[in-house]
Length: 212
Image (cartoon, rainbow, N blue to C red; front, top):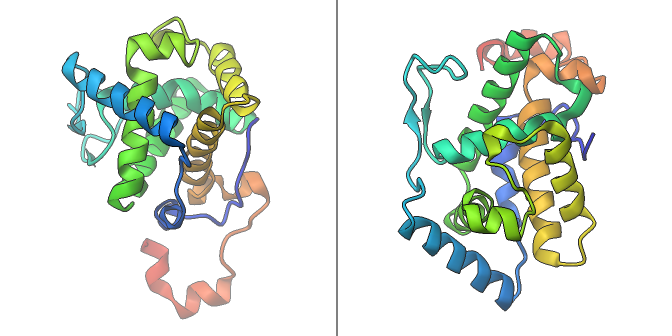
């Protein structure tokens, strides 16, 4: 299982990651990301947020409206989250799908609160991974993300984690940070890191947090 975060993290903590840049790219890295993002747009790749998904798509809460992630991004995280979160995900199929879907919604909600600079960096990173040519040549992932196994996703993450190229290292950090904060920050997952939740006296003094 890749890098985990204190379970006390909340959705707001995803937004607070905006205080530092996710991808500290040099000139070459910035040029690559910019070129890929432009190419992805010209090739017809999805570049607009997924919006409110059809109620037919039972993976997601039909009432939630995506403000940053595209449908391609959603498929990317559906493939990566089982490798990032690892055994913390339940094996029960329906509950597993629901946990992944809820985490992706939290990722979107957090990124939507980022500043423009970090949003641009993440958009270019996601385009790099979603654009077929660079997914194969740079990420070395041969299948489209919906067909990628957890083992293949984990192998990709480990390649980027141990790469000698800073762009890939920082891409790995960005993907795992936002995923872990979104997953372990959910109250229903606090126990996985041994966090018992807020003390009773605090909940009694601040009852508004019961429905926050």
